[in-house]
Length: 386
Image 1 (cartoon, one colour):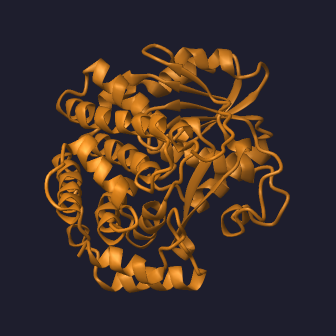
Image 2 (cartoon, rainbow, N blue to C red):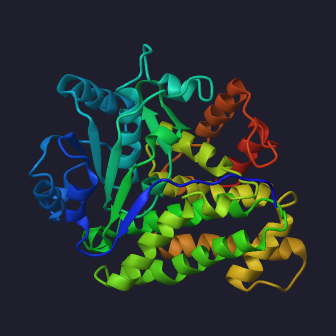
């Protein structure tokens, strides 16, 4: 196991009927901006619950955050934060709303010319201050409610980039599983795939004798396999909704990454598919992961074989046969949720592969847990998904 340091400052308030507790977590006399997405919270009752919780605060609202939050929209919110002297942000929605709120929190107090610097000059330009924020999670998927990472798309340049900093960690996140009840099938399926892929990014690397982290990760994968279909079949099954919601949070709050190598190449490649074609984030992961496992089967052999045996019960055949079966079972699971796994199923032309290859070539990117995935391997991974 590798050395590590771990601190997660996010307070989690979990369970039915917990949204009113928002009022207890926001500092008194705060001027609050509620940030949300397309308006579904006004149909499922969450908006009214939050509005009631904020009745003793001076508060404003900003809606319209996209499923892949746009830099351009976030900049409008930043202008509002500055104009109204907002001193607390409340994200009400899924991972996209949370990601947008994190960027808004840092961008509003950025003294430079353009807070996009956080993304294009990552690790060179970092936030020195951020407006504090909290969250009411309505869609389990990204784990953004308990981490400090944000991913934003810039429409004008067709880029989707990430940055992270402790200053944009939520002070608290309210997780009421009853919010799952009104979600459409597509969002539930995306959430299960997204959480599943988050675990694989931290698990399918190489062994470092960290059995506890492995079993934490495997427990999340098995729970998603068991509970995801139950939520799809019966949206008001509270126990399944709760297990799904908590699995998605645990998949990316840092716990299973402690002391182990992590990959994230699938995410970096998937972001380009979203940037060029607007494909749902989770669905880009479902496309890319099978190709990554195929191309990197030699480097990831030990962990893919372990994954295949412990999660899918695959133990017979040669190593390559077992890996092929493991990839097939992963694809079968994603497809059983209604999530296709090839580029043609999303009308992505072969020419896009060349564009993505060129983008990684220009960036001189080296991806993966061993920094051994270059633009040529990115091309091979995507060509496998044609």
